[in-house]
Length: 117
Length: 117
Image (tube, rainbow over all chains, first blue to last red; front, side):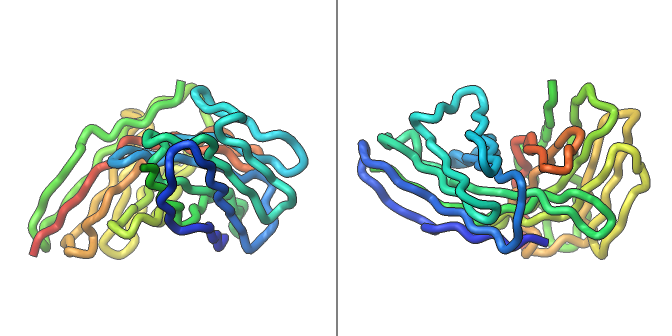
């Protein structure tokens, strides 16, 4: 399995500010995914980050609001810009990992709990 | 379009009862992958099982079992002799046609399971 860490684990921020979330994986992966989980809700994909190219954003998410960096095969950052209380969520990164039999499994980081006041 | 439906929002059982969590999916692809994840109160997303569309063999792992039926597009999850530690939100998820780089997941809304002693 892949081991994924995220920083910070939680933060409380003031509206109008920005927060950068880091995601580190213990092995090299091609794709990394960023999801948002609003309070009491399911997970929604924000964007897919491929090393060496620009991230691909899902409908309803834009690069200006959620810029993503992917400088190498083990690391990615997601920035939540110009935050408002509606951005209060858990942000999770995930990676696809292939087992010995070629089966893909997606593993998730522990998440970053963000509260915007 | 891809869609995952978990019709049960909340389920409450008493310890040692068996409980089945329902998942119905929609996809146009003939090759796809189904997952179950557990999210305990601590918030991390724990991978439970992955199923390929071409493998309809049901699986049992300890107290957990999964029933995959393509004819009804269902992938149900049963916990036998439930325990308090099983209390969590359970998510069913779908991905299509892995391209060896990874494919994002489509999640159901989740089922909150509460097991009381």
